[in-house]
Length: 377
Image (tube, rainbow, N blue to C red; front, side, top):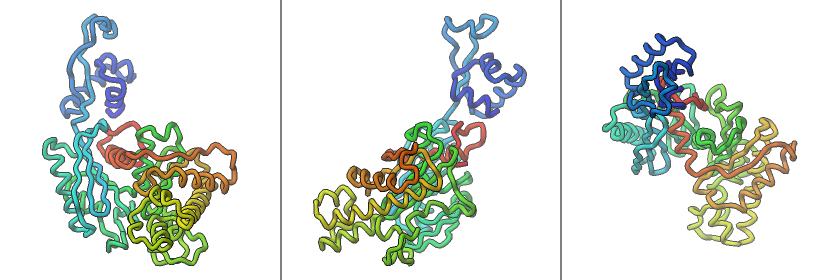
């Protein structure tokens, strides 16, 4: 069944006779599967081939055409950030048909209540919600579906179970870095690369890995905590430990260093472009240390994993920071063992995270409706 749906989805519209030839299945088998797909609404039937193409159907009579019905199921991708919840509703063929954005708090009960309420509002017109993905920061245990977010008091909150119980559909969770890398692959921004490392620099630092075309999750599901790898400084990190990469290169640390250097509290909201635009030697030194440290840490991943592509994710903190990107890239290549190897370093796309959340939800639909590309599931 899934094979026929993919044929109609990717090569359609197709007649029954064309499906028989393309699938290699017997005519009775195709007829039975098509009847089932029509009954469940996965495919619809309309139109015929133009007269010049009638010869493709034996017997000289134009066959009615079968089309994939993307509206048979919808999915919702959601992103939870400080003070804001964003949601995107898409059809089963990945077309975004609605968006919503609401203010929220980090109280877990209120935040999850809002996710449920807004997902239901989006589904009210279609009535066909099939899956949900939520992108959110923190330590995500993908095995148990829990989230720990110390700055906001989340301690193994059972996000997946609570959302699935209330919505009655499969729910998946993604970190911001995971959502971004899945989006880079699913939209084609990553080209045909199948081994990719993505660095996510915002308030904190995360990483995500695609190996042989699939997202790496690890034994417990907690991967990508590059920011909490030690680099030998004596500075205290927000996690409570000393010497983490974040103490030099994370957004919170870079901003704090700039505020200390210039005595300007308003810089605690500045991004890299803003800071570089100050053209102050002390701030330039802060940025240079951050780029060097982040590049060296990225080289660890390059040396361990041998990816063909490294992506610096597009975040509000990194937006437009070309000089920082250049310094980061130079440091990563300088510390890589194979300096002349095949690895490329590129900017990420700004809409990657949104597409990643939608793609992850699409992969949780029933098998006949899932996209051919499978990155997460």
